[in-house]
Length: 268
Ligand code: ZN
Image 1 (tube, rainbow, N blue to C red):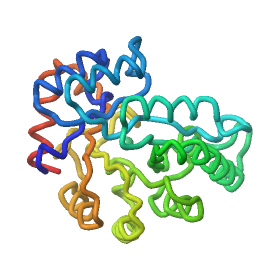
Image 2 (image 1 turned 60 degrees about the horizontal axis):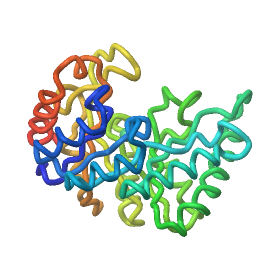
Image 3 (image 1 turned 90 degrees about the horizontal axis):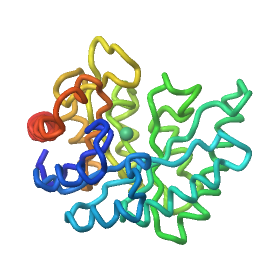
């Protein structure tokens, strides 16, 4: 993949202050950053927006909003703040993760219903402000506590009927195993719903369900093929490298950026 499509998610760099992350990426001529809200740190969205703008970086997306099953109001206050922050830093979208089962419930259907309602409420706020919402389905191992939307097909069903301003974030790590992925990517492309694309790799064996993701090329995901499908479906935006890895974080941040750029060039 051409480096002018590269965005680096702040989680990939470990515990690096936003100013340092922005400086690092700008020095390496990485064109875009994908920050987590908690990584905006003490400078907040306003301070981070200035740093990012001054460095000439673009923002592929802000991670993240959602968790609609957290309370009966669809986590409204926090989600509105997330939209405001995404606008302030000039993000191309706000990435949302749905939340798992409703508090105290064992019902997946009720939880899915609450998620749809929460999304509709969020869209009422985000749409007039012009901030696209990208639903990111996560691997089913997170269904109980983080995200009860686990396939691209389910995310597309949610988009159906919610009107404009919503799309999907395709994350290789979470979706690579799904036998319907190719047809769902094609479907998403036809409806122009692909809003973000995240990459890393699935290691065998995986030592930890959150913190042992691989650099592209280190694992079993056929990323080149996936990128071709996503590109073939019409997505030409940034490709965000999002790697939670204690192994990677033990390296100096400059080294991480270099390894990400090399892996991006050869394996994505
Ligand atoms: Zn992701």
